[in-house]
Image 1 (cartoon, rainbow, N blue to C red):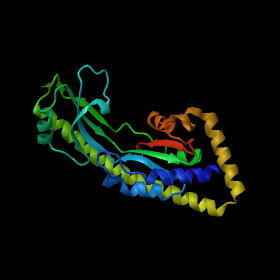
Image 2 (spheres, rainbow, N blue to C red):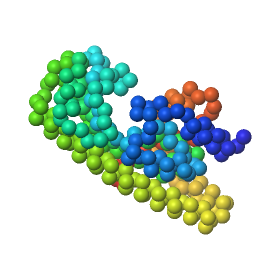
Image 3 (cartoon, rainbow, N blue to C red):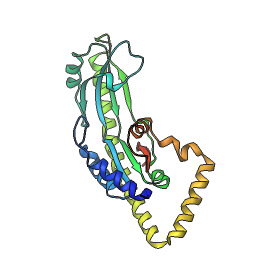
Image 4 (cartoon, helix red, strand yellow):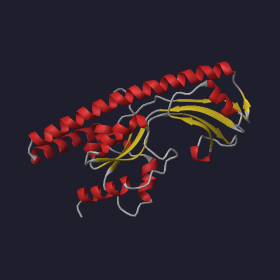
Length: 238
């Protein structure tokens, strides 16, 4: 079986699986983006989050935040209010941390050239500790201030998703036109030339930087070899 056929088989297998996320479905603000990617033969999404505000309670003995070992006190994909955070904090026993996390998409790509279209990063986040050993360490006024910032970031994140969708759609349409206009031999020559140039300029950026540790572990546990390339997308300047 050639690699293109193997990629199609793997894509169909992945998209037919049950959604095991906490929410159990694709977030509303990212549905169109996920559908756009999955509608193209060279991509498929393995997980997604449109962005969220969360309040985690971690063990005070933990050296770093690990979500799988934390108690989720609050999670919302919409703007929240101070009172919701205050109520949730009453259940904290360790170190409660208020976080805003922007859009995250894990996308499997058929070829390196496809992954290069998507590879964008962002530092558009927020992470602030609020309690220690269950004791509130900040004022309600400060919590209200943080919630406003988190909500502003949520709104900006939504705008970035829209810009990213429009730019991606334009890039894919342009790519389709190029595929029609150029013979296959010419496209292959251009792609190989582009890949060689980028690899010499910055080999880390051209390849390994966009393969996430999480997806690498998933691939190691899969019964089949990886027929594609994994890219994590964090919209920044689109």
